[in-house]
Length: 123
Image 1 (spheres, helix red, strand yellow):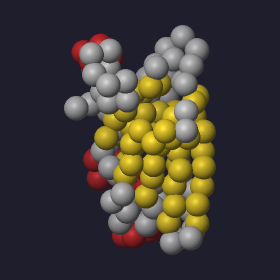
Image 2 (cartoon, helix red, strand yellow):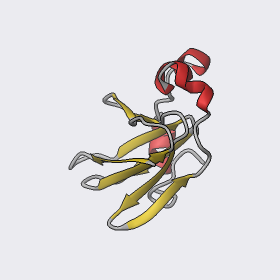
Image 3 (cartoon, helix red, strand yellow):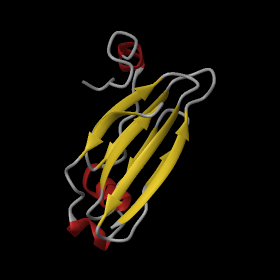
């Protein structure tokens, strides 16, 4: 089993908007948080992380699952493994070829995270 742990930190003065592919889900984390991304798969690989000023996209690799840990607590889990068919290209390239770039939260979505549990914004 191949396992990786990546850490992302939200800016000290702004939330971090994360988008997860191929699971097509977005989460928001308040300023000053560190998020651990625990991924695993029977197939060797690593998460691909694509950062822009508006959002950060995280792409699993073939066969991988993912869970998010904040302050030692699991806040999200993606148990549906990434399809192995996506291994011919990187997951990022495959998803962008099929669906385009991940969404960027607009002002309405950015405001929503304050009204919902802090880790969910695109529901």
